[in-house]
Image (cartoon, rainbow, N blue to C red; front, side, top):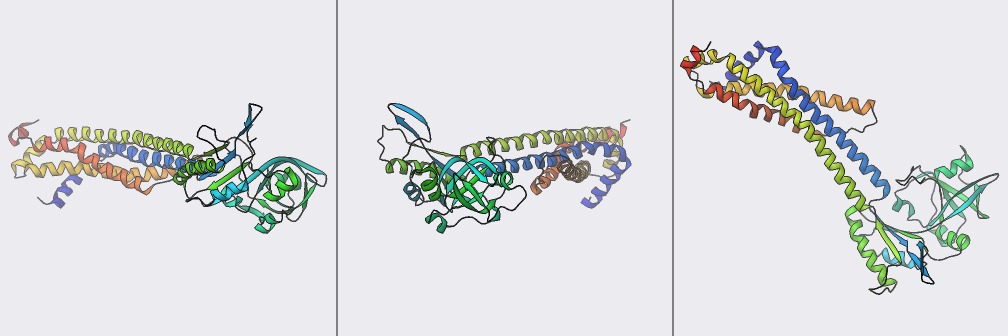
Length: 404
């Protein structure tokens, strides 16, 4: 018997029991839909984690001044004074280093006419924006010309701009930073709060030479930020920077570092691994419901074999071969799971879109998850339909004909 004829017989058998066939496919529909929706939620959550980690700068290495020792007493971190511009320039020559931003930071009161605001003033050079992955919302950033001449210019964070100017445009206005009049060149784009809760927009950025010479009166740095191509490069650059800094500061093997080198790459790896585990967990839970649907198909097919024992005996008596009976019942199971798979795909995509629209959960529908769920539903139908089909094919014609 041809496969077309066998498929026709299988479809006719299912059509005779439409309600039972529909109820049988519910398990597969729910299973496939759950796989797609769950993986969509997990993928969206994983993408949100990646976006949040990018804000932390997972491809940057931070070199901070260490603690100084005075009269045998170690002070707090950042009090050592051996971090210099020359160190930043030397780090910039290391392989896999994209950019280097030397930084000086100090809190100051910033005034504009009758308004004042206490904020953090950061001295940096032109590499600050690319290293911090920051953009401008208004105006422009200062140039190398401003840095070389210690110009009285600044760029405001969004919070400072709102506190001092409200809704007015601050570009080209003049603010006072410790009695130094600075022309506002631009306003940074809003960045929001850091993971520690600190407002990243509460900041004023000025040329590092201006801050060193005219505000703090010191030449040492507070921090050096190093931009690398990616997260993996940050881990290798971290070790290279530490070795370079120990050589430049002429530290002996038994001496502690007078600086601190760190990166967020370790945190990123741990977070991404947790997100991957979360994705597999949700996918596994959804797959269990698909297996339950497969068990339902096997159960119904066994009932169908029992009910149609006499029919099977008549077909065999009229010349049907065992493989024809096997193919018919196997095709019935595959059709059930296939129809359930198609409806489950529609349910899963619809559910994922609805969850993404009416909740704050991020949802990303993965094409491979749709294909995987559909293929898996067909495999479930084949695997769980094989036993009932073999049972039907192995019936003896004489016994089947006598079955009541």
